[in-house]
Length: 273
Image (cartoon, rainbow, N blue to C red; front, side, top):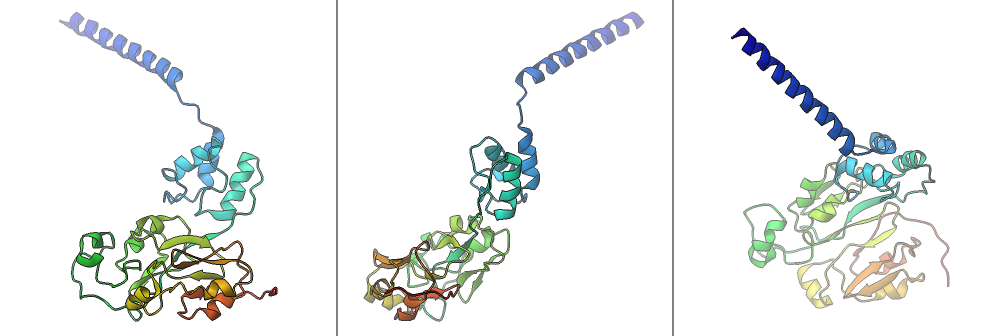
């Protein structure tokens, strides 16, 4: 009986050693080579795992950068400081990264719009697709104010004020989560130092816009005719400002009859004839 126990112990031990040996061989044969720069890049990334870079969290972003599949400035949260550190790791010059922020292109708050009815139910913008009329607000393009964007933000940078979403540009990290969360596509990323922006997305004709909002764009083309820098154009009944051409003179905002062009950063400039 005692000899049987010894034999069984030897067999189990031998099997264990054989399995261990095979596992060691397998780990060597199938191990994944990790670029040491990947760990260095991961160490300087902010660690929010917000997905704003377009990859599955910071590890995915670090892998893509180390593999040359993404630029050193891929992380919108880290911005220029992190891009510079990653550039040093990758041995490339990190050109100056333009800071971006989210902006809600709607100023149709409770004072400017008239509700169709009093709503009581699930407070979710995405749920309004299943609500009669697409929600209680008359404008079918504007901010619904139920805060899907607020729930998506990890940085407490967006809040509902008087029925519409407003972004705190100092707190915003431009991760893009609020852009994805908005079912009406009225949130976009714009340069931090953008001077003016048209705060309306209503593409209906002027009289129809005025019927639902006191401050919507009526496609009158006055802003387009006023701009001396070819930075403003009306497309599909809505004005757009080309931020690359805009010099911040404020003429378009001053002339807009509906006051729907918001001056974000006033600049002094030389006006050209």
